Image 1 (cartoon, protein in one colour):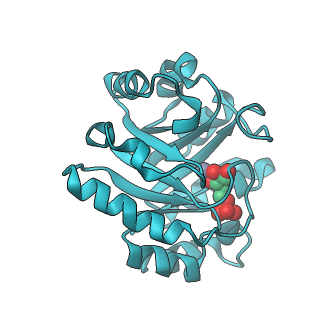
Image 2 (cartoon, rainbow, N blue to C red):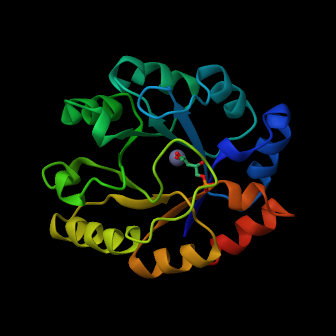
Image 3 (cartoon, rainbow, N blue to C red):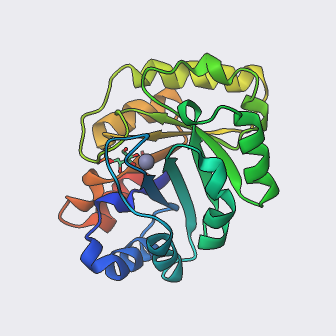
Length: 214
Ligand code: DX5
Ligand code: ZN
């Protein structure tokens, strides 16, 4: 299982310390949540913070854009250090163009689906994707509870990926802990994002280790 701890739940006063902790842990990727206050009802952070994180780790930066019009910023995210760039299906009118551009810039391309968006909307584009991010909470905040309907959704996505012989990785974001993580692993998830479960635990690196073993 690929584990991508969400930096959104770290202590921003100690971002260097927390990034180094993640860098030394068994985490595979670092999940970076960018929110614009328009697509989601919250504002997180932008390029300077991403650059600061990049300075302290060589691990894959898994950047989740919860922003309208991501097309305007793709190049800047590449420059700031993004390795994987995931845009929301619901925020992209010309999704095929956006995905093509992300790949041209040398990043892996992902698409995130809100809880109400069916996986079938990816039927025509799944072959082009490196990753699909299933939101198992409504995006905008850490610490929300897991939406159970996400489990059968992972199975439907898995079937869609197999049907199109796509190489897309199935990643899940929101309310992940050891209990939901186990169900997700059984359903076919390949990557798990975990924010509050990691950072609110006594020893975050041990929690990452436990998730890794799912
Ligand atoms: C929510 C973000 C998540 C968030 C997950 O909009 O996309 O990545 O950090 O937080 P937890 O793991 O606490 O649900
Ligand atoms: Zn996220």
